[in-house]
Length: 93
Image (cartoon, rainbow, N blue to C red; front, top):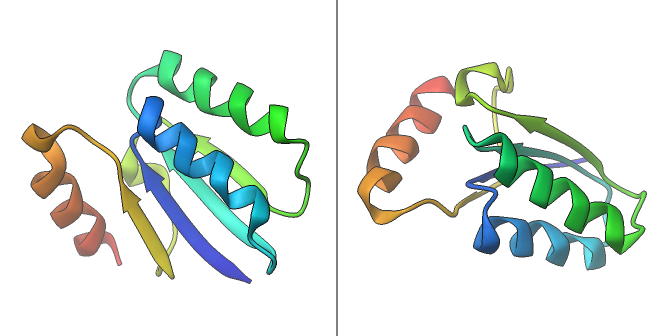
């Protein structure tokens, strides 16, 4: 199974999540954003795809992921925090 992390669930991140509906192999997808409103948007957009092939989990804190590796990471944050978030993700793995 493919493991995908999407950090940032606002407009861009939630669109990346929607795009995963066409991914053929099943995937474990973790979506992370400290803003509950952004996670709600991502969840609504994902549910609208009707895709059930992938397991999607939503987190408000990167430290809550509990994964040891990711095959793909999409960092869809503002430029101001992108480097710090990337370093934090890499330190966890």
